[in-house]
Length: 112
Length: 112
Image 1 (cartoon, rainbow over the protein chains, first blue to last red):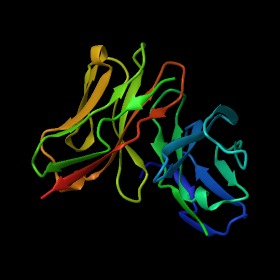
Image 2 (tube, each protein chain N blue to C red; image 1 turned 180 degrees about the vertical axis):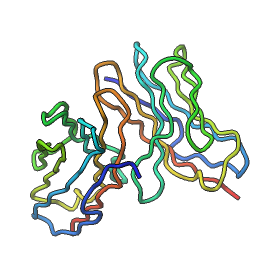
Image 3 (spheres, chains in turn orange, green; image 1 turned 45 degrees about the vertical axis):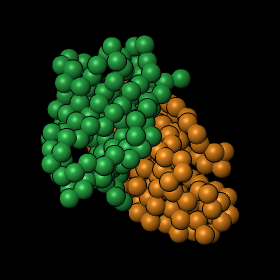
């Protein structure tokens, strides 16, 4: 158990819908990362937050957004969902920047 | 831009044989280096890391990796493969002042 909690574990939704994925980082970790993993794209970095502020942005679509709250948990919002958005979404956290990250178990999103 | 290459998207070894998974990075300044393992339907788990100091790093489950600056490599080895080692392995780097960069992954199969 990495200490990073992601909910829900599985999510099935229809195209065009909006979903919210939640991540609770390890106790004391200030940095949160979001990744998307699909069979054809591999592990894609989406976005990183550090102590409530956006620090880095990767290949995140405009239909996707995220935030980190004062209690340091984070949410990833995916809207206008398409079939191609079906993937595993991972959250990871680290104590500070530039150090190892610990991954949650992921949320498997299926868009039908 | 920083990149990480992993030679061989799929590696097969016999049980008891040496495991060698290759990782090379592109950076003129040595980054922090990591190996992660992902078992089916699970998140990524940190195997080992190199930041500074001794270039031979030991990790969990009998794995080790050696940082070779002259070769910009960080290959992962294990003397004797076990069936439970079958998984996806990711090499990752953190270049100075930058964010995580993950390699594409290598799927390790262990044959009886």
